[in-house]
Image (cartoon, helix red, strand yellow):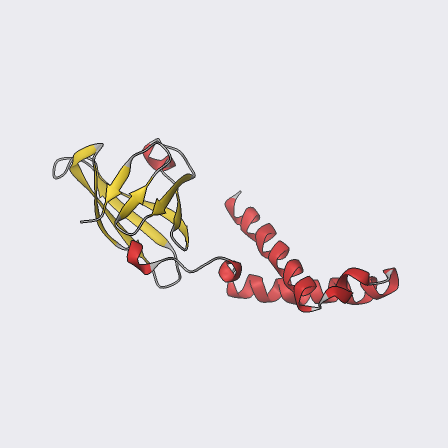
Length: 148
């Protein structure tokens, strides 16, 4: 499930943080030193990450210029609006045939200028990559949403 995946991800990043923060000597721990320090340090880091919910520490902050109104040439009567939330989450709202079509809202993940969009609620791909090129979002299939 998604929550289990997030917990595993947080624990992974916590363990990675412990290894990075302890320097190269962390990789040279003897078995007795690891059994004493490794689990305790990993548990402390995991608790910190789990409490804050932050796994974005290693990802670049979303480019705030991504936010705005876009058009989609595949849906000329529709619209796309991308919002970057305060926590770095990205929400895309749209309508494929405005004003008579059904409005939708989907989640995306951003890492700098890169997006990973979940279109599964619309019957599309779960993880469609997109790239902000300064004036629009470019997709692997050649589609491009120009920014208005």
